[in-house]
Length: 294
Picture 1 (cartoon, rainbow, N blue to C red):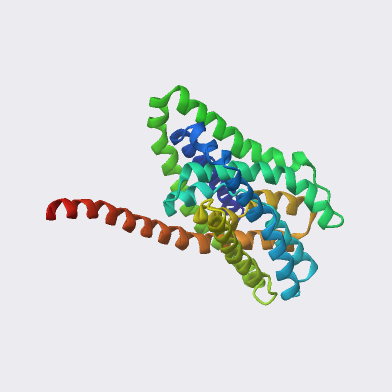
Picture 2: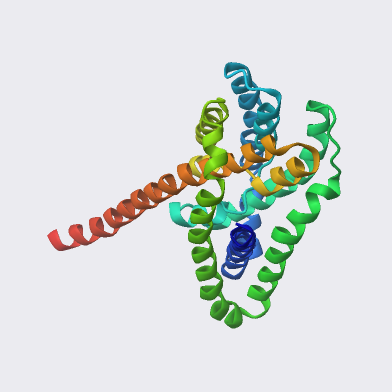
């Protein structure tokens, strides 16, 4: 089991770095920061990720009468935004990957700032500093992204050559992660079945996706991108706080939430990608058919 845990941690690291570096090698800084110049896009993203999820979590805690440890875990994941997997989900869903990467950066920075401030105000007995949250996120996300963007800008040929290898590493590690996640955490997730924590987590995932989608639609700020961004939480940041401040139950719920995210977002992203392909195919067929008939 210890070997599997080590492999799980290694694959998690490979997946995050592979995904982030792939985005950096394939995009430019202007492409990533472009959407962030849209004030409406930024406001919708902040509301969908840092206001709506904690409110929904509080409501679900009351509805399901969750015990204190499960309530803390649910509230914790509701405050942690900016999942490193968002760009990969965007690729599968065929939404704007540059905007998704920019959104991820915005949410990671937001989490670094908001989480250390909000958690002590909402939860008693918690001690978390800015650096506790920032260190891992900066090292694993922001630094690799910055370096790969520099390589893309300065050495485009080298970036083009390296890109397929990092993309393959990201895809393969994701498959291994999914298998290991189920194998290693199956018993813990089963143990939550009668507590209401599992159902509350699933509902929170669904409602945050819906909330992000609706806010994105109303604000004309990328409906599905906002939904995908809001529904995926930053499990790494939540896990850091949970392991440093709380007992095993909260950690289990965080892991449980990551499993639900994988289950929900895998089919959702693939379905969106399938629809995008169909629309693209119709667009390609339309002009040809018109030309032929003419």
